[in-house]
Image (cartoon, rainbow, N blue to C red; front, side, top):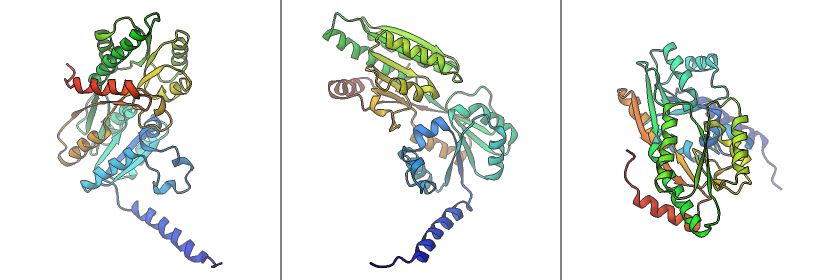
Length: 332
């Protein structure tokens, strides 16, 4: 058996480590700060935390790969920073001081602290994903995901789908449970868009709407989901923001069909999803690149997508495809 030259192996890994360190010597053009919930859904894989070489980013998600590809096309270098506590102002301040970049991007849950940081660093440029701004700083840009049309179409499709089920089983009473986080005017509008679409076509199914106004306490969401299970709802619209993963754990073995938000990219939960309203990060990032080049737009709008999940199959999948072909009009 050929003897392994341990010195060469050691040299190989030393070189890899040096390359990794040197890559940090060249400052990034864009720093992407992500809360842990956004990170779990979009920017990581299930294997990443277990991989010994995860620091080399071998197991990065498809979304992260695509964002990096778009950045490279525009000669931009991007780094991703995971933030465990979105209210840790001192930590973020330290990171921004230590990383000189053209743009600092923040995920939706970090909008408030991003605004505060923009006040602290008026010479730097900040971008906040999601939501319309309550206040505007001269150095802050906002990218708003307009999800109303997607939720409206989800409501129409839900109504049509249950109509088909009612035709097959006329003796049953069908219920649709809606769990919605309604912290902002925009999210209230999204709920109304779903409700409007559903009631536009629904014949006999009944909506059970439950709102949650805080993400700090899971008890309300848990109680509402238990209520849905007790009432044997046929379909659940789950739009509970960062509480969605916990809710999906409860619904893992539930027979209800699930329409949700921003979860289709999650390997852990996608098998249980019928439809998902997805924020189009690839298009959003192309808009962010434009900001880095011209720095004029203050508020940008990117429409969300309604995409089928893995639980949508057979006749229901064909029904959705036909539905999407016929519904190309924009939300009014």
